[in-house]
Length: 461
Image 1 (cartoon, rainbow, N blue to C red):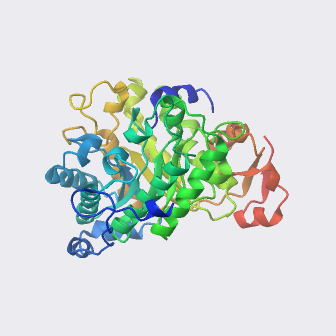
Image 2 (tube, rainbow, N blue to C red):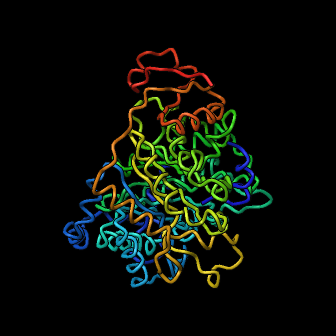
Image 3 (spheres, rainbow, N blue to C red):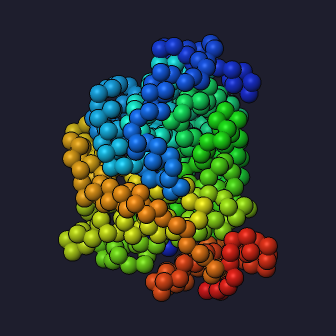
């Protein structure tokens, strides 16, 4: 999740040596041999777990949640509590969800560029076993400089007078490649491993905290380089980089180019965060609130070179009580269900993953922005909330009647460098019952492209 201060601003706008570095055993190690990826007894046991697990794997449209541990927050790696973790995962499984996305604390796993924690790698593998026992697959977010308005980079990047630009510095890039390689060797073969998400909205680290001058070209090269590494060490997985709407809802390219986000890795991961527009206080069941995540999927697909390129709503939700008024709060569940249904109407969509599983304890984690404490499907003491009940209902609905992608024969033509120009038209068409796509102006005359996407009518806003 990104810094709320940044979201508020956006809300107004619709080397070889390191590659061989080690990590094994239960201690911090320097140069040693990584443990091989294995299929453990727990993995084998997981293959026979819950019917819910196999049902989730059969879903064409996956449904999951971002995991926030109920008792130790993201400090779970330092203070390992198996019982607590298993209870949390069971909470998630009870909703019928089939996967989680979870955050590594980079500083815990790679405290020095040539030093990777074998103990933490073992714990990660163990956690995947727990998830398997609960019938859940796991996406791993790796280089987290920024989560929930906290900053987590290792100290070796915090040089003075300027922090290391880990998106461009050659040694930092090699260290990141080494960490990905070690992760791939330890968990890449685990049957519950979905893939690597490089980082959680990394531009908020360089923009809001570090003040780094990271160019679009540097960011694109970072993403392409590390996603290529992820593809080598974890082939066939859902490798991506998770971004909110900031790169998509701007004129020109900002942070990353849209072309890179729509072509690199294996899937485009989007965090719509509709609630930060303030719309849930006034009109949570209107076209903007219920179709915004769908709009961003269509926008990403317009920039994809492959008409069948998949998208994933990797974070959405953020429905704390302060985002609703007293009048609209009873509509929370219906907003959730309509928004998820609309995302599921998009072809080539991997799934929908809510932020987040459990509320955060103010006693454990003081001085966060107040809304950060109230985003879970469960309370901090593991009581189901209305949002959790709504997610459980949509999961059951989709299992009874799997969603089918809608035909989108209408394409809204937008300038390649101004994706927001078609927003009002998209919502107007949605309100009238028309499922629309977006078409870049540079491709509006490409009949093969239009045919591949099933578009027969073009609309110019």
